[in-house]
Length: 490
Image (cartoon, rainbow, N blue to C red):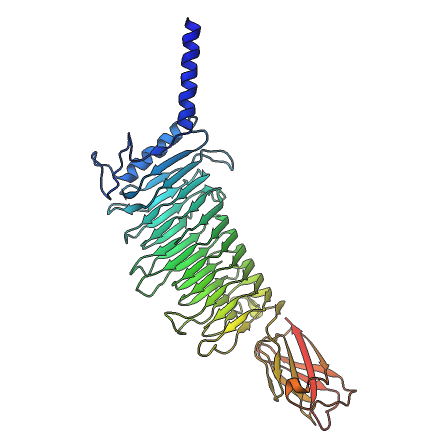
């Protein structure tokens, strides 16, 4: 008899644990009873405090929730007066309880008047949250000077169909001063319709800031948009202290700078592809910080992007679409540019390093396509640096001097009776390698009759960095100009 009772009790206990392991926490049901009308519940509790109780329950009964906990939010608006704190449960790189925050229908987390810091914080200064999923939730900062989501340690997690609006500080920010910096990696932000956007009259607001070892983050189809009426001063996506960040099919619009990397520290491995930049006031993309020699971006790939340089619908004060302040081993290939009011791609010399050491080195630029709106400015490229391979369209000029702009190859004509031809090509540097040869078939290309008497040799006899180089012939062509081909690399 006793044995039968014991077995029955054991079976009921196992069944209860299994049932609980497969269940979820409904934040509007017992014992929480969260209000869904943007106000306190009957017990004068806001949803933020109740969600924190549910998180504590998930950790308390983590054996029962061995397969992971889901905190479920039925449709409605949830008032957040207390910051939602998911402190994480691990101090190493593996283990911990997975938690999903699942909204159904239209679910809004509305920041209350007394809220400080952010609507939600994931991880703590000593622990990381692992396998978190936030799905189908709208974080409304309600214009307060707070963040939407703060991250102090997050691993192997995903934000899916999350919207964050009207934050006067950051929509998403990884916190600095984290003693557990490396516990913030391998996370994905997958947006459904709108990912990150800022509300009206929040000019100092920022989109996403990745600091404190935010490595291997991936953004897929994420909108990072500023829709405010004031002139923006913030950045859409700021990548710092990070490695392996990818932005695939992202739309970044309306900021002072669309995407900035390496402004506060070096960044390694950044991929931006298949997306859209528009209406960013100063620059669409900035790599590195030429005021600080150590702040570089190593290994950036910008490809298959459409970058519209106009601001508020017109070419105005935007100086450059892609600003290479300090970049190394980068590739800018296969992009479509429109309406860049100055140089489309501009590489700064590093003014703080001795001997004018350039800040953008070891890069590949082009082929890219350009569509001018008004005047495209002085040129498509201004590339200061070393070991840069440029693949723009070739230059065609029969004038003397030949005006070739930013190109790495061209077809020019040495005038009859002359020994020297100056080629204006600002891509040239002190260490450019320039090859010159004669091609007597280029008459129709250059609109001249080429000299057909050979026997001449050609040398580069002078180079003025960022300005021009001079081709000198062993003897002047007689009755017709000598048709020449040049190529060079930096």
